[in-house]
Length: 361
Ligand code: IPM
Ligand code: MG
Image (cartoon, rainbow, N blue to C red):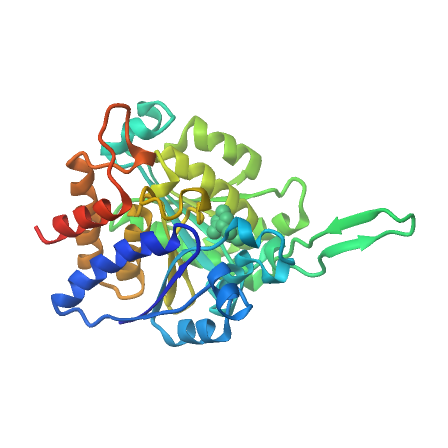
């Protein structure tokens, strides 16, 4: 198991260190893990003037999986766009062809009171957001800021999806829905678009409907993205798998994270066609709380669990990590972002140690 570790910026290094503690335990038990570190984002820029140094991309390409912290920091805000930390992230996603981004939003019963929504709205919540990750307005050309004849400047981007890009992510969506439904259950895919306005979305809807014919056991519905944003807070449990494009998925997954109490709990997997993957927490680099030992490392640890499940097909290890997180929450241990009033808060490091302790139990 050759794993590239890319801590990145802000809280990245400290949350990654907690996931690495978990990996070290597994290695001591005999799991053949091999870790190699490389800089990305602002750290890549600082090290070699590029948010995705060649050596980092090469390492990622030669590894079976990548574990990434987060990128971004105030000190890089003034850089031209091509040098900004986020470009490192977008380029590694594209460079590894990681078109399928899985963002599961699950409510841990222990955190039910951390959600700003009423308990009955969110209890038992278990949604999988599948976001297309290498196309759409994120990568479409042309884009830029141009000056019109009258001297006024105009910004423009291109939303674009080809049939094959839509079909391949749709297949992943239906397959996930089937897996989640198990032997006899009915999986549900809700495809989210803006087909009442956008041509890109009209094609999206057409292709998804076509692909659905190959999965008669899965129920397909369609929803406009504005309605989906509303339904996610009104009645989120109606969803099973949400299948959507890059920009809509970016927005809806942040929204869905709050259903679970904190974005600090949300892991993600970004997969290519062969289940090679990049695993990262959904949250950002939170530079305001960096190096204060207060960030929540659980999303990163849960991302490691996803790596075991999807890239290494070690469901047993994935479940062991997930149940260790569960046990830690059951013990009442909380970082600041998920602590209820009156609860004792522990730091990033202590949370990592607690998960390791649960793992060894
Ligand atoms: C995410 C982030 C990134 C995105 C940013 C940091 C480029 O918001 O992973 O959701 O927009 O994809
Ligand atoms: Mg985002």
